[in-house]
Image (cartoon, rainbow, N blue to C red; front, side, top):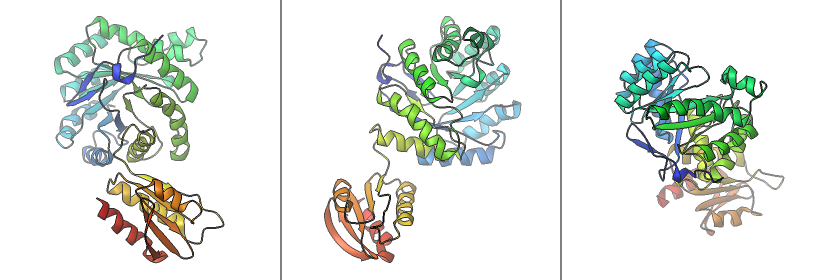
Length: 354
């Protein structure tokens, strides 16, 4: 059975943003601050937006969080998603206060009449709904069916129960996620969803762990799906600051050639041939490229064994010698500089290229 490639999925409007179809893959993250703390939330959202997020999500834990949406929306430029669990009345209140999309977890909001009221309000206000299945909160009926085991079939069936109700009420502005913390089961669930539903898919691995572990596990789960043409929006869930999730998502999409507007740093792991202090320089250059959103490929190499070759592939590069560096541009030597002058000189040459 063929699947719905991301370009063949239904288009869903979220605020002024179109998700799905031939539109770009959207990067999103989620605020780590209680939503009623509006100033801090606004600052966190705008930090993520500056780095490339085009959707942001906030938790709606109580009435104060829902009411805070109106003020937050005055100070941000991207659509806002409200994360709703357990209390369907908070979904109604969030919509009335200007939320652009809500996430409903079918594992903990299942009362039919309450969901129909949410659907009616979402249709009235042109608000999209994400059917957000999570392996940690599947409903008891599905867990019992699969002998208390999390399966790809169970995740998709959980989504389908809510999707059937949405469609029965003529609601189609739907986005779907099926997040687990197991890499292979998550991949299997999204592949099955791509064969089953015509709606945009929100990719993610839930509870992926602290930064270094989470980056590896999220790459293993999301990379294959993205390469197969599955997924319209992604969140890299890390036990870290939200802006780290955005940077990780941009890095992933750039390395898969799905976006172009992000820096690429090529740097060697160093070895006994290295006669310069390369690691701090590589980190300094990477921070400079990201902070200034410079979409160039830059090579930082510790010696001449691979240096000129890698620099030839890069827009600009630098290779270490004995307390000095040679700077290359498109493989052509520009100059040799002292180690102490390396960053300033390379920075100046990069800025010339812009």
